[in-house]
Length: 314
Image 1: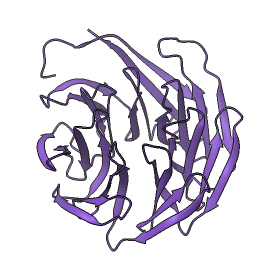
Image 2: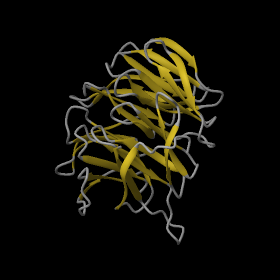
Image 3: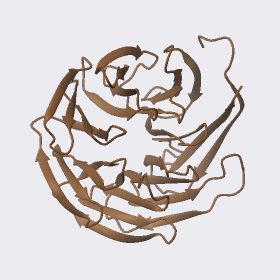
Image 4: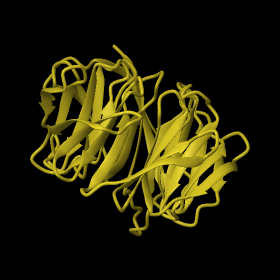
């Protein structure tokens, strides 16, 4: 630890089990009360989480995919609508109250990435063949498709929806205008592939995690790198800003999740974990971090768990 004073109090860690195989993705809804988990077991689950409670949590199973649910995301404007992307080539929209699938569309490849435009009108989906599809949410039909000649890893809009980011296997971040998808900048971000991207909820920064084990922080108005976070030693798989933009969590195959102060770059807490992490995501309203990885039980079978780390600022 680099700081002598712990900025957190009332630390707690809770485990949730429901999946039969490992969890690939966790995501909070816009109110911060529901958490969704997507798994290799071909299902997603929705959990009703009391921010400070320890009661038994009920969950709803979203069943219908015929392959792994690799990523999921909530409608930013509707607390009960969730979209899932699966290796079965479909994207599905679900009502989290009933657990029913309300819309689905079959695309051309195995889907691995999905994200909503901040105004909730479009969904972007990326597949294993480096093809990007934009869906109109109302009609639930593709309105734009583009195949890239390089490895596309993760995708994100900025807060206004005017800029679209791609992280690539070339170590670059492609910055595109939206909706034209014209290239505005190619940022030489890392010396190895860029795997993940997170947008600061305040709108000042974005962060990029790379196979070079670094996380870079970028000023979004200048498109300049302002600092790097260097605590991890393995390729960075997943990153997330907390709701105030004060902290950033990053995880890899290292057996801890690093939480650093965005302004100073210093580590302020490390959460020990037993396996490589696949997904970390901060709650949009509270200091709760959901995380999931490749945990196995004593029989070396997938545990199918995720955990939530929570604290109050001291």
